Image (cartoon, rainbow, N blue to C red):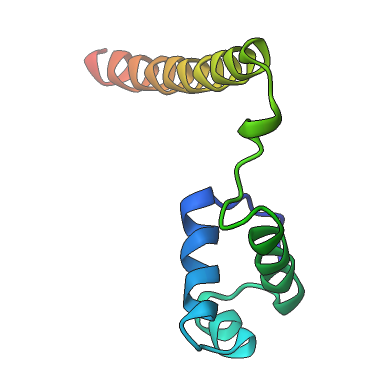
Length: 94
């Protein structure tokens, strides 16, 4: 299985399915996620009192840096997509 990154909302949904009575094995099979990862999410969720967020422990500067890095990644990705689109359209014009 490839390394995947899961959004906090997705992890929360999975844990809530477990809390509603579904088994780890059942959820694992349905969403194609390893059992041990789901158990890890459930443990983390419980330890953080119903949250995966680590933002509570971050300073305002760390939060800002985190947000700026995310924004930079998104803008860089958008720029790369636009470069490819320009390349495709300029070839078709010739």
